[in-house]
Image (cartoon, rainbow, N blue to C red; front, side, top):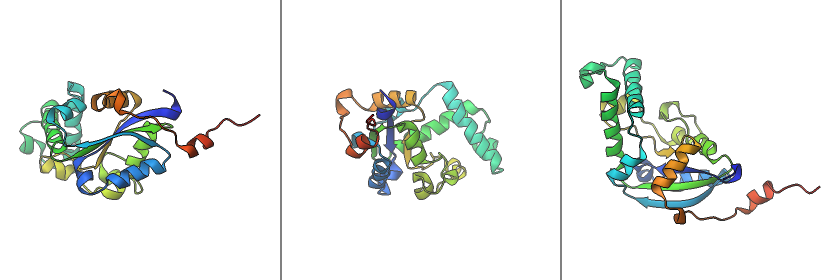
Length: 200
């Protein structure tokens, strides 16, 4: 694997699917000069989603910490809402809401390939929290959900899309969702011309 054919994993979440954003998301990826080299659409099983999201204490505790920070930011009563301020306990609840959300409707999973694919797609997607995502990004343009509202309604935040955070995560997620033979190889002519070695 080289910089030019780095791969990342992308998932259009159920809210992105029902908003009719599949084509828009693929278009933005391709306009960036990246290639979709594998794609599927289906309603994922709970086991598939459970295997996608880490379940170690550090990850789950981090989910809980984010929730605690949201409650503190908006002056909400965490103890009244959850009966505890234990980040691990709260994180387990949040992770459960994520699994519920991600199995509530169809998802589209993709492998995207190209120059610095992980970083490029993360830029296209925008910040995880829609309210902080820049205009011009997918989340900044099409998502309006709030972590405070999501927590109050005991559900996952609706932020349209998942993209791998780094190369190692991308490799793990691609392996989880796709078999090697499901990933195809093809050339994009304009990219080959752009990065062709200069004649001496």
